[in-house]
Length: 241
Image: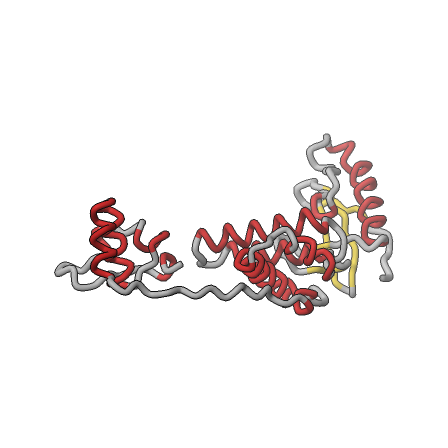
């Protein structure tokens, strides 16, 4: 990248700033926040601002010349430099967390991101790193659940500019087939459950008769979910999980 040494200027309010051009477009920085620097000349007395701004100009020049990433003001758009894989994945996470998903789904995405961050840090995302993360989960269900959420973040990161998705090389773990035998006498089973616990019996009736899942859909029901004549139950999409 061809870059001329940034220039120091003073605006109409006596605030100093540093300006430079990238691809014939002018940019100005009043402090070093966007280059991860604490240098900020404008809190200083007027007679000291120019000298501090020259320090800032040197920091900006060195940062950009060495491939530092500069983003647009209050934006994730890259002006120059190249984001790391984790930078792209963090943008992907922020995008998903800002969307209208359930709290449970967002928490799982955050957990998946934390696993990636702990495993790869600033390194490049690769198949080995992903296998290391997934190898911690022996259960096929847990393995595949985490794989699915990791893939959501990585696919989103690829759409934002990350080069590739190494998850495509990792197959889902096949769960062992389990034969679920139906009860021969449901009424008798429900009767035994009622004798054991009336609340559990009611939960079973809702699960069996209304096809609701017991973990959240039944447990978090309120009277507002029932119709006036109790003929049907209405759940929002965020609670169908």
